[in-house]
Length: 308
Image 1 (cartoon, rainbow, N blue to C red):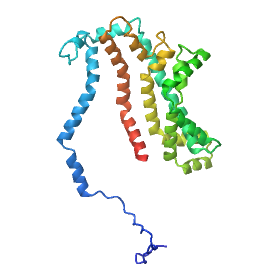
Image 2 (image 1 turned 30 degrees about the horizontal axis):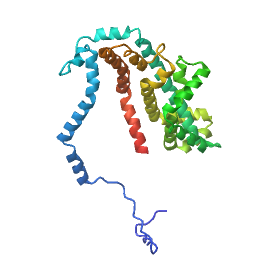
Image 3 (image 1 turned 90 degrees about the horizontal axis):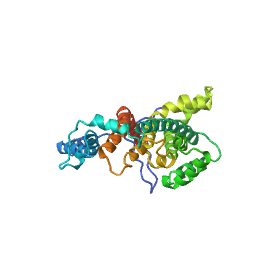
Image 4 (image 1 turned 60 degrees about the horizontal axis):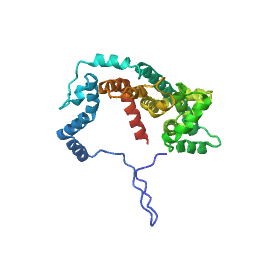
């Protein structure tokens, strides 16, 4: 029944604060003018200088990779690329101590397999903790949060004992299997499933005859696509750059790329051109991943920030 605008307004009881009527948000013209005035040429100049200052170490790494060791010692240092990049690449790949080509292949395998498994298993676990009702759900969630509080260094010795018991030392299984599920990934996907997957949508799918796994595959996974992209990219970058655990469990015979860069510095003298060439090789895949998926990464993070 429509309510007439001439209906008498209810007065609040004595001692109670009157409730203000809801009004949609309206941007004030004065605020728009103030925000436009804040972004001036000086702001753009400061941001440009900050970007150049942050990106200069990365640029200089590529400069040294195209030159010899003399470029590091000369004063002022060279800032233009040289012509020795091909020679440095050959010396890096043929270095007998580093086994750099095998390190690149191993890192690609470890980072890719770990990223895919973390996205899949953490999505399943996060969905179960967010939407399913079973005994001990809150205790498991608390346990997942507690695992994030344990420093990685404290877990190295117990994990080494486990790898010895499984006879996995020197095998890639030792750097893949322990990190196929992470507490951070489970908690992240649980929070996104709580906010981004309506319970009514799951109930409608079950009424239509979907099994729980089919509802997860057809309803939940499309809704969780932005956080899955973010989690996959973060996991790939973390495992690509991991150094402590691979050097402890793999050793120099079956290295990852970070261990290979460390082996380039194992002689009596440091060949900086060789090390910077290896670092440039290790950085290129991450730059490629960020160029291809950086927009989705930032979009997923911003979507989560807005929902939170």
